[in-house]
Every structure is written in C-alpha cells, then in structure tokens.
Length: 201
Image (cartoon, rainbow, N blue to C red):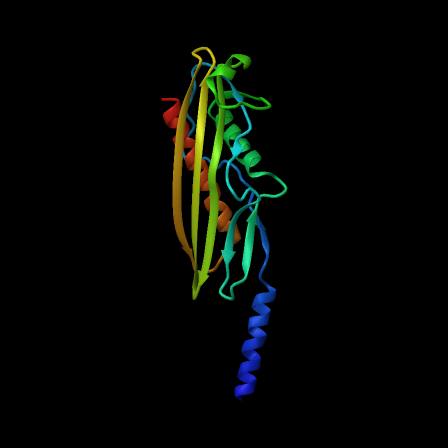
C-alpha cells in the first residue's frame, strides 16, 4: 500500500512538472477606465515610441507553481514599448487628439523645435511586471507598473513630466492567465489616464 501511495504521488508530481514551463501571451492595450474628456479645439500630438528601461525587457511576469516550475508571461512578438505606445495612442485618439507618429524623441526641450505639432508625447517604462504565486488552494497575483510620461510644448520650449506608479494584488481561487492580462491592462490604462489628467490640467 505504501509503495502504491508513493508511486501515485510520484506520478502526480511528474504530471504537474510536465505541465510547467508554459508561456502565456499578454496583449497590452488601453481599456478605458473613465469617460473621455471632450476637447473644444482640435490638437495635434506627435507621439514618440516609449523607452523600455526595465531590466527584463522580454517578459512581463512569471507564475510560480506549487511544484516549483515557472510559467512566463510575454508580449512577444510585440515589444512592451510598442504595446505601451499603442495604448497611449488609443487614449489620445479617444479623447479627441489627432495623433501623428514620430520616429523618436529624446524627451528634452531642445529637440522640440524639430517637431511640427502642438504637443509631443513620450515616456519611459520603469516597471511592468506581474507575479503570480500559487499556494494551496489559491494564487496570489501582484501587478506592478511604473511609467514616466513626458509632454512637450514646442511653442513654449518646455517639457512637463509626470511619473505614475501602481501596485495591485488579487487572489484567484482558480488561476486564470486571462485575468492576469486583464489586471495588467486595467493598471496600464489607469496609469495613462492618471498621468494625462495631471499633464493636461
């Protein structure tokens, strides 16, 4: 009986280990959290690609299973910087801005004179990470984001800066990678809306 119990335990452990090491795709996107702000005058915004200043540029999170195996969350083949930039673009268009993409911006006032737009937007991604720790009966998911937004005003030759940081924790009884993606996008959208509410006030 003891041998059978040991064999059964070994079989279950092997099965759980074999199921580990999966990769889950996270599609970064803007999901409106507040109603759009109506703009009276049309404004053109030059949007530059955001910089990914994170140490881990490939992944956006991990899940550690009970058996010790690790799953990955990734945005591949889309880069994180590209996903965040597109999310910002959607926010701007939804709020009545005309958006034109520019190749790059160094986030400095001196380079604003080269841009033909009322405003220039860029930013730095400092953190975008979700960690899921599975314990007995539940999985604790912690999502952390930090992004610094830059709003340049070419006519005035100045740049406004607004950093926003957020951390959220939820508990899942049954682990769902879709819920992790949902939480990441809610946090990203909240950060975008919070930053521009201050930059445009």
